[in-house]
Image (cartoon, rainbow, N blue to C red):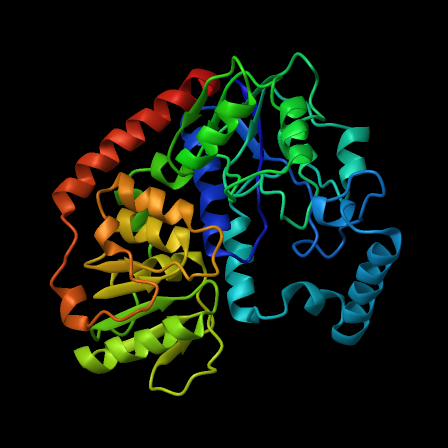
Length: 386
């Protein structure tokens, strides 16, 4: 039995991050391997995180010593004012946080590494090391990227990436040079977006970079449907999941509810626009899945909101990319793959409810494409975990 370690974004009160981490872990576990997620702590996700002086995120590397000190002082004052726990969970509701905690407890973790220095001082030992999905290789992240390229693992270790994401359209020369240093030791590299595949194929001469689907596609659609908790109130509704808290998208959703005569349900959005809608504050991952699965119409600017609208066979859904969103390529990539590019809202949000309701996704086409994407993705991963 192979022992496998996954490094990814985990322990996050974020629906997409939690579900993608669980999906990769669960699929590998189902294949009979001994698997765990490497518990490397991150800023803004773990209250006991310790910032390394050596391993810095790019955003701190670019700043002068004075600016770095300013950031650290600001963070300290924020913690003093709001308390240690609240400084890391502002904007999240206690009931929802508890449900995330219960959900994440189903995943086996390695021993905790409270700093990047700690994982280099005492690295975990596995037969196979996997860089997981989500935007682990995005230089704008608040955490240091280097350990997510598995540079702490032994030189002769088997290392692969599964559906890793860069999340931006271009890299600086410095970032390209770092990627060139960190990636050649991988036995196989796969990314989530076609754009990232193209970027890395240009950087890595002699390496073949594969494109695979988000880890959530590794598990069957029925698996997710069984996990979803059906809402208690079965009155027809439009669901809005606005990850970016976009005011214009909220106003659009309110208009759609008015035009359709249906109830509007909003998950995780501050009520800062007047209108009659139900604000859901306490949904955990399973409740969130249930809300998507049972909606008459899903409106979202979230990549994973789009993913699960496809996986759960939502009656109808539309995605939105704000003009200021620099990470929208992953949504357009996904919609193009499933022949759903006409389910992307215009940037001006001028559509009527009648237009949206007259364009229902073909479940048959989605099912066929899903089977192909799942098979391709499983074939890539199975070579290294079985």
